Image (cartoon, rainbow, N blue to C red; front, side, top):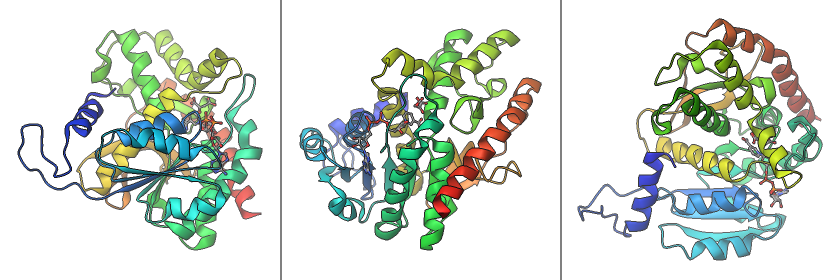
Length: 345
Ligand SMILES: NC(=O)C1=CN([C@@H]2O[C@H](COP(=O)(O)OP(=O)(O)OC[C@H]3O[C@@H](n4cnc5c(N)ncnc54)[C@H](O)[C@@H]3O)[C@@H](O)[C@H]2O)C=CC1
Ligand SMILES: O=C([O-])CC(=O)C(=O)O
C-alpha cells in the first residue's frame, strides 16, 4: 500500500466521529462525501468496496450492482470506519444509489478471458456503460466519474457522448482510470532499478490497452541508468500487465485486487481534489488537447474542486518514447471513434 494511503487506513480505524487525531487534538471537520460504486459485487467491486470503506474521506458508501450488493454491503458495513454503507440491487434502485454522489466509480461489465483483447469486451460493456452514464446524467450530473470498465479507450468517449446528449457533459468531471498502469510501471521499474518502490514515480500516458499504454521511464524517479533493452522490456511488461494477469488466472477473469487498489488510489485523489487539497496529481485518460488528433488522452492531470483543473504537459520524451507515441495514435484514434459512433446511434 502507498504510504500515504496506509496512513489514511490507519487513521480511518483510529478516528472517532468528532474527527480527533490519534493524539487527541481536534482537526478540521472532513466534508461529507458520497461515493457510489457501480458493479460493486464483482471481482473488482468487492475489494474496492472494502478499500473505500477504509477511506476516512467517505461518509456515505453506496454499493450498486444488478445483484448481490445487499450481501457485500452488509459485510463491509460492519467495519468500524466512518462511512454508512447501503447496498442497492437491480435497475429500479440505481437512482437511489446515485442520488447525491460526489464520486461514481464504475467497474461494471465483463472481464477478459485468455486470448481476448480489451476491445473484444466492447459489444457487452459499451451497452452497460451507456445505460449507467444515462442514469448518472439524470441522478448525479455533477459527480466525478471514474471509469474502470473496459475498453477504457472507448468507454470514456461513450460516457462523454451520453452526457453531451443529456446536456450534462463537463469534461472536467470524466476520468478513465489508468492508475493500474502507473502502479505496474512503478513496481516493475523499482524491481529493475533496485530502488525502494515506495519512492518511485513513473508517468504513464496514452490510453489503456496494449501499445496505447506508454510508460515514460525516461521521467521515472529516482533516476536509474537502465540499459535500452531493459527499458524496452519494462515498457512491454507494463503494456502487457493486464494480459499477464489474464493468462495467470487462466479463464477466471482479469486483474481485480491490484485494480481495486489502483481504483481506490484514484478515487482518493478525486476526493482530496474535491476537498481542496492542493497539488493532487495523477495520470488519467481524459478529454485532452495535448495531441491534436486524439480528443481523449491519458497524461498527468491536476485534480481540484471541479475535477480536472489542469492537464500537465508531456515533458520531454526519449526517442523510444516518441516512437511509442507515434505507434499508439492509430489504435487510440480508432477506439475513440468507435465509442463515439456507438453512443451516437
Ligand atoms: N481500467 C482498468 O485498469 C481495469 C479495468 N478492468 C475492467 O473492469 C471491468 C470489471 O472487471 P471485474 O470486476 O473483474 O468483472 P466481474 O465480472 O467480476 O464484475 C463485474 C460486475 O459488474 C456487474 N454488472 C454487469 N452489468 C451491470 C450493470 N448494468 N450495472 C451494474 N453492474 C453491472 C456484474 O454483475 C458484476 O458483479 C471489466 O470490464 C474489466 O475489463 C479490469 C482491470 C483493470
Ligand atoms: O487486462 C485486462 O483485461 C484488465 C485490465 O484492463 C488490466 O488489468 O489492465
